[in-house]
Image 1 (cartoon, rainbow, N blue to C red):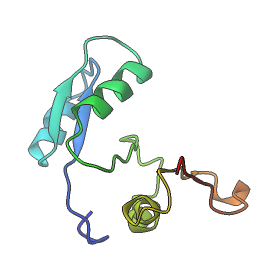
Image 2: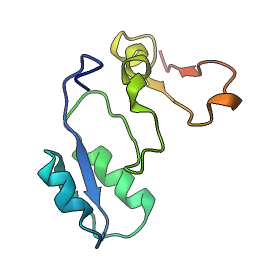
Image 3: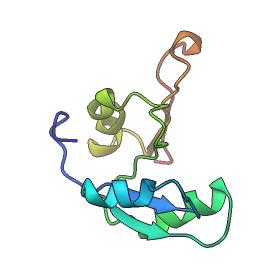
Length: 103
């Protein structure tokens, strides 16, 4: 976030992990919340409900997504040209930006 010139929080939803990742995340400064209902969807919904910011970026902790381009991802929402931006981890398949707006 600092590299992109953004301020915000890192929120980690623990969905019953036993590998020490929640402690690692908390030690790195993330806010960790627990979600008792198992499953990816439950964890995602909990994260969105707990988020304090006006822009929410969802990313898995396994480095699936290239967050070095966070400024590009969030810019259309921040400047009001889009309500939602979807990034793809399959860059070779991407034919261009997909911007969706309800306004």
